[in-house]
Length: 325
Image 1: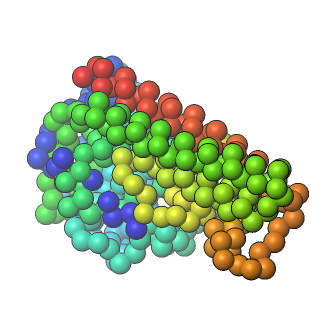
Image 2: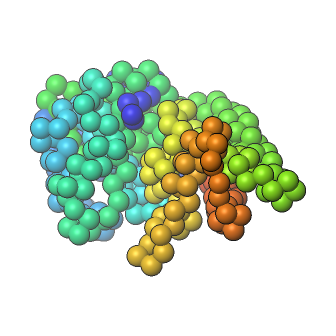
């Protein structure tokens, strides 16, 4: 499901800009390191001791689980703020990109379950694992900010015997990335906001709970699609709000607070939005209490504002990088 992005393996290391990346400030595994095994962590220089933001042994255990009979990846990268790169997840999480030769048997949803069984939450120092599985063909034929940040700044945790990993030689066209993301953002953010307004009108003016529920759920789907495109530079192949949230929840702790269940309170908005999409257009017996629907609509409105702010910050980053280029 995540098999998804100008070729990167023919290119040596270069940071995005000298000002804002750590790729040249810290030693990184080179393409000449032994392959087909876990890549050892570089030794810290005595004069510049560095404190790692993750446990290398824990990361190695995760990689071992992925390669122990489940996948045969070409390489696995740890990227984002744990390795001092451009932040991806807001919550502390292992942001991992696993590149495979062919579409694997297991998608990212099943793989999260595998890791939960093999490396339980209770045994981790870092709870969240945000894993992307993409084919080598896709990675070589697509150029997006997401792929560039991962390959230019990421820590190489694993490389197969047959693959020669190298980093991007030049930054991508951030001006184009900004224009594409901004167009998508303006189009579908607007759609989501308009649907929310229609939902509010149906709720308060005509007491049409069916339309209010349907429009609210569809607005949330538009918001998630917008967030995914701005961060990843590609369209999302899902339309299920429950799965979409699971895919992107670590990008924002505010989103997690808005929709994740707690030990005290069951926040059931996302499953209800999913049921609205399925039942409100066709179910003759569809019904919902106004008080409950009002709660869900308010959460959708709040999530839309969070996503709009997140996208705005990301777009500012792309614009700034395009101007530096």
